[in-house]
Length: 161
Ligand code: ADP
Image 1 (cartoon, rainbow, N blue to C red):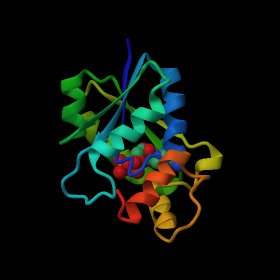
Image 2 (cartoon, rainbow, N blue to C red):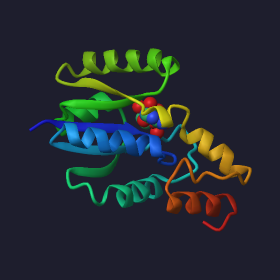
Image 3 (spheres, helix red, strand yellow):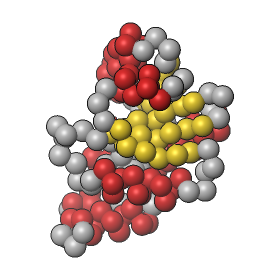
Image 4 (tube, rainbow, N blue to C red):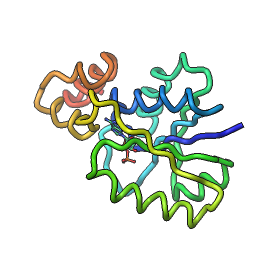
């Protein structure tokens, strides 16, 4: 059994993340999607809201489970018996940080490897921060996130949520 873990902020989840989740779910026996509970960052959505959105997206993928975690990723992977960390790579700009992170995590937990999935070309430009910015100014985000996620973002910005 190979246990994979896909950590991230997912603030909010985008089609880029969903693409990585679907592809990773095919490669590994189980895939946990972990929403980082980071007290230093001020997110748009609470951890509970982000977990809920991801759960709805993943409900039809039987080997995917959504959870939240806090603290060091290496420690979490040790505790949970994770074999593989999944990260998505969009462009060279992602690479330097991701390389450093994966080497640090391996130093702290030699039992874990990071596997990078390169983004599908149609999502290479896509990030949660771009989605937040476009939605903030009332722009159309329907090409970036599922319909129900778009509605949740607009509600959040209009103060109804
Ligand atoms: P973090 O704050 O941990 O970078 P994100 O939610 O921004 O959290 O991203 C989580 C992971 O998903 C990262 O590995 C990131 O590179 C990847 N990712 C984000 N957007 C895309 C995308 N459009 N295509 C492929 N991977 C992506």
